[in-house]
Amino acid sequence: MPRAFEIVVGNERAVFDLLDAEAPRVCESFARSLPVDSFSVHAKFAGDELIVMVPFFEDPENEIFWVKPGDVGYYPGRQTICMFYGPTEPFGQVSVFARCHEEHLPILRRWGQEILREGSLPVSVRLHDPSVPFTAEEVLA
Image (cartoon, rainbow, N blue to C red; front, side, top):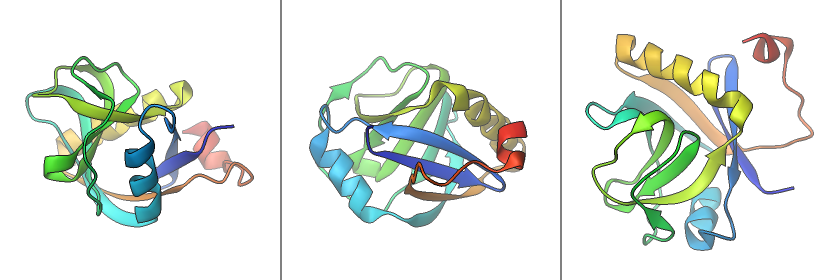
C-alpha cells in the first residue's frame, strides 16, 4: 500500500496517494513537513484547481504540463500544492507527486464550489493512517 496523505475541511477528508517512485524528493520533503494547518484558495484562470500553501521547498521533479483530474502538483516557486479536480491548463509545468483517490474527486469539486463562493477554506493536511476509519458523516458526504 502506498504512502498517503489526507486533506481535511470541516467534517470531510480526501485521501491522496504519494507517488514516491515518480517524485521521491518532493514526496519526502512534503511528508516531513506534515502535519500542517493552512488554507485553500481556487485558481482564477487555470481551471478546476485548488491551491494550498505548504511550508517546504524542494526542487522540481516529475514535471508535466498537461495534468489530469486527481493529479496533485507542487509549484516550488510559490510553495504551493495544487489539486486538479477537473479541466485545468496550468500556467507552466508542475511537479506531480500525488494522486487523489478517485472516489474523493467529488469532495474536491464541492470544496472548489465553496471556495469560489467564500474566497478560501481552512484545511488541515496530514499523513493518512489507513487504520483510522471514515466517520458516518464522511461516508455520507
